[in-house]
Amino acid sequence: MISQRAELPIVAFSVKVYRALLLAYPTRFQQEYGSDMAQVFQDCCLRTLRQGGMNGMVRLWAVTLLDLVQSVISEHTQKETDMKKDDFVRLGGWSLMVGAIAFLPGAIGMLWNEYSQYTINWNSPPMQVLTFAVFWAPILLAVGMMGLQARYKIGNSILLLGAVIGSIIIIVGNFGQIFAPVYSVSATYYYVWIWGVFLLNACLSVFGILALIQKPLARWNALPLIAGAWIPLLPLLSGMIKSSVESFLIIVIAGLVVMTIAQVMLGYILKSDVPEQTAAPT
Image (tube, rainbow, N blue to C red):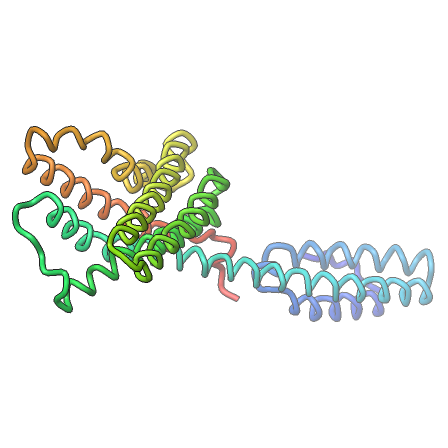
């Protein structure tokens, strides 16, 4: 609260005008700093009036107005930047959830077609939708990783590297398969796509290890590791094919389901985990 020392009418009037000008700031800024700023301005007015008279008050107001304009613009710019960042973080959360759900059915179908004695007709419309989803869903995972990079302050370089380079490799692999002149070339680009998916999940796994150590999430800090580690671990399971294809399929599909659940949960946490200071009403 401002003290009752403002006995001079010019000071009292100046403080009232200054309080009105403070309404130009974002609401959160007013609530946090408005009272202190008005108190400081009142003290400056009293001191300036005693030392410089009315000429001093004119100079004080000139400097104050210039600083006020610059500060208001800066605060609103920062507010807009924070809002855009929060919107992107939420987008990353939704991308993680949608991408995980879109990837799972097609991935199971590809595994089933590869290792089971029963083949799938991929030319039917439903299977073509699943094919499109499984090949492009990792791009949504990349967007989710960039959302994690924007929200949390650990593993930023590895998340950005995985998201950008992984997406480029996946796009090259997908378009290579689409425009490949012969099957052998298409198969080569298929493995390019696999390497892109592997890189995305490997980088997410590294972030998961860091999350276990530094605990940036409010809860469930093991989720990033669970969400990313399964695909990098799959090559270690390839030796099981020789002994039991059925066991291999069951284990891999179960791991994919757990991975999907973890990615959906991580996406939900990400989209909901907005910093309090940028979530305040305007």
